[in-house]
Amino acid sequence: MEAQTEPSHPLENSVITLFSYSSLNMIKSFSDEFLSEMNFMAVNGEPFFFIIDYKLEKVILIPTEECKSNGIFFEIEGYTNFPGTHSKKAFQIVKHPVTYQEYLKAFCSIKEQIHIGNTYLANLTFSTPIEINASFEEIFLASTAKYKLIYKDQFLVFSPESFIKINNGKISTFPMKGTIDADIENAEQLLLSNEKETAEHSTIVDLLRNDLSRVSTNVQVEKFKYIEKINTSGKNLLQMSSVISGDLPGDYKSRLANILLELLPAGSICGAPKKATLDIIEKAEQHQRGFYTGVFGVYDGVNVNSGVMIRYIENQNGQLVYKSGGGITAMSDPIEEYQELIDKIYVPLN
Image (tube, rainbow, N blue to C red; front, top):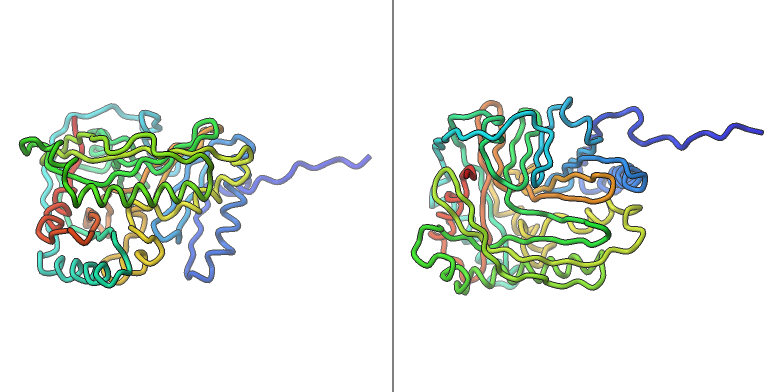
């Protein structure tokens, strides 16, 4: 009787798999390889960690236990591989944002597309050179964000926003749209009653409800427009969030990667309608997002928890750059949106 051989593991000879899609025409062949590897690990209950960039041009897939030895440190709602304890270090951030005139030019290009009817919500982002009196490791330890990540010495994330969670076959997403200075009198009521912020938040909730409907059934908005407070190294902020959930099919583990890619890019960081808005953003923005506004997460062998890579610092040849932005609608005021861009350059602290 012939001896039966075990099926080879896609990651058998590789610790980190980095897929680089050099053009849109190449995405299919590379993504097929990625889908196969992630789905294989999910079905077999093998824990893994993943990072997917904004344009789906770079995907990092690695067994969770190998993250630390490869310079990948994370904390996801208390689950961490970082060998340090929380720090109380105070930070000083010096910001060098684009001029208002530069911002206004991009803002007006978005507004023109809104008036034409090609989009009704577009997330406009910029890169801001900064100086900060701390290392990536010190910021990681001091920040209180739900989703934290250091990728080698290349970038740091301390994000408040979930992408998706999967628990026992139930998928949930938690869009965040709408921000206000928490120290303003009656700030919470002002945010909840703000017509522009409510319209922006409702648009994203509708978009993500539609996205979840493509991969799950019984989709519902479980909680609409609740407020979270974020304490920062500068001013304190209130942010508006919602919870949307659905039921995945019984075989979802065998197509877990397909589900992720079906939902990307995350609706909260592009806009609606998604496809047209992605093209509009590409023309308006003056930088490459790279991993900024992509997603990262962990599969523990059963469930998934992942975050959107906002609140993001990148090391560009020794110069630290903080990437930030906000949603533009027909009701947006350029001065307020420019200030929001700057206000989002912070480190969340206790």
